[in-house]
Image 1 (cartoon, rainbow, N blue to C red):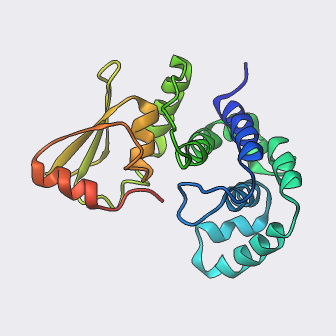
Image 2: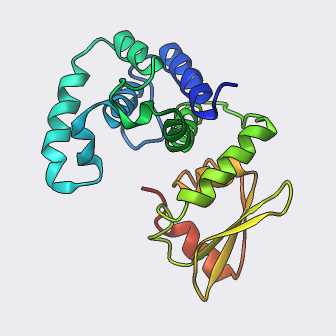
Image 3: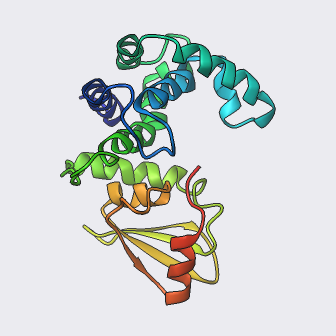
Length: 210
């Protein structure tokens, strides 16, 4: 069975090729090509350490600049083929878990930056997989939240606390939509926020994402 990460990778690459290198994304001023380069470096270049380690940012910038000179279709083809053999992401179980959220979020960064987008109807297996990933890694993007953050599935009522706090806001929706909100795609995520009005405003205006 194809993993969620592999499926989202294939869809992202197909859409990237369709949109072209200069189309916008939800990642600030990044174009589609910028996002493809980011994904390639993240899972296949030592400079990826600069994503999380500021002193290595110069190495990351140089690797990014070099990759940006490559032809767009070649970059997409490389991304479609998956991580290099020596990459930790090439280990099936690790790659599937670590890339599940990454490729779902970034696929939606392409989709939802375009006019007239609509949410996808995802299989239950995909929603369950995103929920599992959100419970495991969702604490990191909520570290800067101004309130406690509880996420709740609108399809079955399951809950998880991502950030504890005396003041809490519940982010309710399908796991796919809740994930987008938690990772900072607030305006595009179809969720309901439940809590004290002041807390809801604080979370709406506060920092989420990586």
